[in-house]
Amino acid sequence: MSHRNIILIGPMGSGKSTIGNIIARRLHREFQDSDYYIEKRTGVDIARIFDIEGEQGFRDRESSALHDLLSQNNRVIATGGGSVLREENQKLLKQKGFIVFLDTTVNQQMQRLARDKKRPLLQTENPRERLESLLQERRPIYLDLADLVVKTDKRVAWRLAADIISQLPDSLK
Ligand code: S3P
Image (cartoon, rainbow, N blue to C red; front, side, top):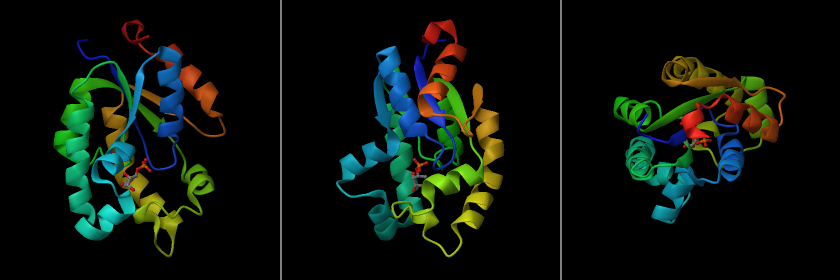
C-alpha cells in the first residue's frame, strides 16, 4: 500500500469530522475536513456556495478539494456526504487512502441534524424524507468503496475512534 491516508466517508451527521479528529490526534496525523477546506478557500460557507453556484458548482469545488487534500500522504480526511457521487472522486478516494464508512441510521442523523441550518440539502419541509432518500441512493456506493464499515449507532465518538484504529491495517497505525 503506497498511500497512507485514512478517509472517512458516510452521510451527514455520521460523525466523520468528530471521529476523524480523534483518530488523527491518536495517530499523530494531520486532520483535514473537506467542507472546512472549501469554506476556508472560498471565504464563504457551504450554504452560500449552493446559493450562488448551485449544487453542481459546489460539487466541482468538492472534487478539486479532494484532489488537493489527497495530494499529500499520512492524513486523516473527513469527506462531505455527497463526495462519493462522482466517479472521478470514487477512483481518487480508492487510490489514495484506506476508506472507512461510518454506517449510520436516519434516526441517528435526525438526532444530530434536526435543527441544522448549515446543510442546504436539509432545508426542506421534510428533512427525514430527504435523509432517507439520500441514504438509499448513496449507501450502496459507500459500501462498495469501503475498506472498513463501522456501525455508529448509540456509540460515543472516542470508542468508535478506538474501534476503528484497532481495525486498521498495521501499516496505517
Ligand atoms: C452534503 C454533505 C455535507 C456538505 C454539503 C452536502 C451531502 O457534508 O458537503 O452540505 O451531499 O450529503 P457533511 O457530510 O460533512 O455534512
